Length: 361
Ligand code: SAH
Image (cartoon, rainbow, N blue to C red; front, side, top):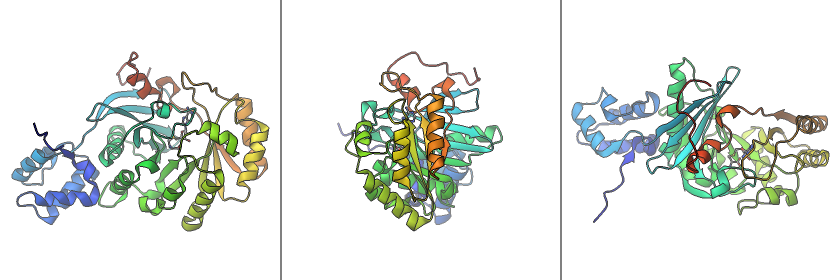
């Protein structure tokens, strides 16, 4: 029996793709404009919401397309204001999206793949490998969903980081369509300079980063100051020599004038030693960059531990001493499994799910 062609979601079409609605009977240019506005700006959930379209067109639109394709399977709120959502995709897979408040900032941490093929040794997302890429709409809907939650409490997102599950540059085309929909004045209108793409460091893709938005920011996950250690922490095929990663980051800075952030997950007694700090300082000497130290969020079943607070301080101090601007990331939402793939893992393993209530504990 032939299977019906899969229905598309309007969020998947992207800004230009919404012109597809011009195929509907009687559709004119301004109807396509209207659809774009409803989907990305006004956050319609169904064609029936699009009240300035003729009724016939709404019906035809609903026959052909869904507006969205994800639903919130779980919503958890931390005492510290962090909100974590587990979104269920149409095929039953789940991804996490997290909103982190910090002063006046409201940062959204977006996933780009189900699972991840890079398989960093300390990361929950890669434990089961890559399941599949997220579609453009599945990326955009993380933003739309959280934007609505915040609007309900009179707040708005200020920043977005592609630092959730997955390697964004391994899903380049869909990430590109999604960021264009978020970025474009005809889409959600969220400025590229407020968006950061975090990558394990894939030079050929870093060289194409402008395609994702002229003013996009780059973060590179380094994690080790030498080849041998980086090879142990990132055993996957996506790892390229450190020199090539740094050169690509330097090219990015030269083109864009935008400073690169290096992320460095601190693992106790593995990469948090004074010797590692000295090597890292030497490696980054003279580069226009900053370092973001991330104390490990423990992942059950993996053989790494959080560094001691003293080791974190020592690392930061040694780098600063060498003139490298360094920040330490505070862990947020630990009471709700907010960190890095914890909730999805719990869900996938069939373990008892946390209570789906919305109240803070
Ligand atoms: N694949 C991209 C983006 C996703 S991960 C990348 O590698 O940058 C975003 C950041 O979270 C990366 O720096 C990653 O190394 C870090 N991370 C992964 N697992 C972590 C853990 N258990 N504790 C703390 N940070 C973690």
